[in-house]
Length: 340
Image 1 (tube, helix red, strand yellow):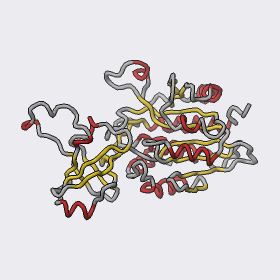
Image 2 (cartoon, helix red, strand yellow):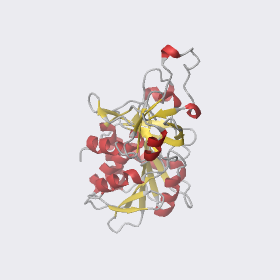
Image 3 (tube, one colour):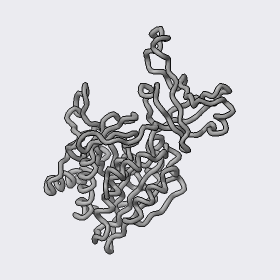
Image 4 (cartoon, helix red, strand yellow):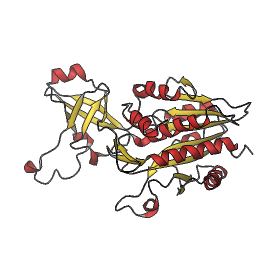
């Protein structure tokens, strides 16, 4: 498979948190050649590869949803008020072009600098953010309803080398990674039953991971998400995390130490680049929910380095997606750490 093409197709799907069905058919089609697909009522998708007489199950998770905005009011003048759905940042909103699930395009209103007295220089809060669709109120209400979702409309684009930019690489990068894992494992004798959870609502409640992990009842799990890569003016730990330098292996109270160490050993043995991400508390990923499912699940976190998270210009490196997928496949084929 071509990871970049798959990622671009995934990032082009609307599928704001709570509306994952808007991208579900694309995800199903991409995974169908490699795995059996089933769906859950809350929007979760499961792609499953059966092991060769395997007695244990490993859950691989990546969330399908993306951040966006919810329409809360439509005026007679044809403007729509919005509220964030997920962790959107008001600083990125002014002048943005937004799009609805059916392709209706609008522009977030802003004050021209010529008319500003300086008090508008701060980011406009969501409570005062409006979207202009160029329509009358009557026309707009025929196309848009309160409760509809909007999201950034920028299309994916290639940068130099293997770097790409797009909204929703959080966490469509993880979905593309697990698609590549499914391809790498397809047709092989597996020591695990592999359940790939493409989970719903990570950006809002994490409910997809909670119910998905309960349903799968795994022995081990690996959550795949994105985390922070270095950029100008970043200091501390993340100033040392580079694009193109491999998966970030989390070390946290949430994660299983034996699994993290096994992933590190395998990366070294396979010649795969990796980086460590020490986290003194929660991981901020679905692993926080998966690890406490039922009586507890041994869980690891692998993150794909990303710049400019939760903006319309997120940046990732395709090689990081590939190398993360290869590390996960190596872990599964090695038999993992067992269930001692």
